[in-house]
Length: 304
Image 1: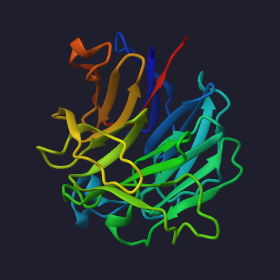
Image 2: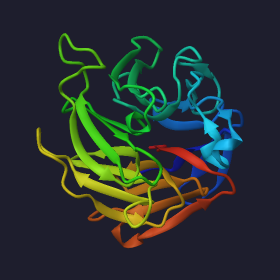
Image 3: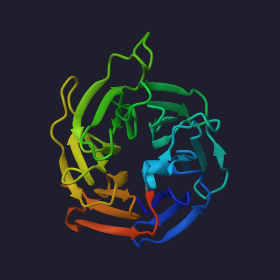
């Protein structure tokens, strides 16, 4: 079971440690780079993505709508759990807009590049950088956001959220490796599992269950969802909403041993949701902590 959560504060851009039991908050890194979004902890190392510095155009509206992240200045970074040894995993600017990040537990990191319209991977030492999926650029429907990997079955999952509150979100699956002789732009093994979702964001794979956050319009949006992994060639069954009422749900991490899903949102909340059939099912849902700034990616850490 997890003792702490590693949490990304998108503004001012920091890495936090949050106690699961008491909600204690400690700043591990005050300057994590511009707009950090995805985080994973692997073998005593913290890895995270940054979206990069946007161009701000107030004519497009206020807040998030005014931020254009299409410049290629995102990043992928690493440090030890105590905040030392900080480094860039890949050269700054290699990523357009770094979003959710995950690991296969065997030395590879996987992430979605939203405005880059792709899913990529690299070894933890920065070698072996490769694109696995590349969509045509320039359309919001092609932007990739959340990612999960299943190294046992050899599958890659990702979300394409579509327009804000648009009800056009999708979740896809493909092999972890490109089919022989194929390119990431034209691979033939991509399966569309779910479509017409409100706005799916981050993913988490736990056994035969796929979990995801959705920041779309209620009642289906601003929710935590889960569904069973479909068989090859079969569409996904309708998901079950496990919790709702989030304030722009983003980050997701599932503690299997505790039977708890942790969800972060742009309202600054980190909430614990007891999973059906798990050991903590009687605990329901509660706030771990409520902050005064928006938070994005989260990852669990255990001292055991």
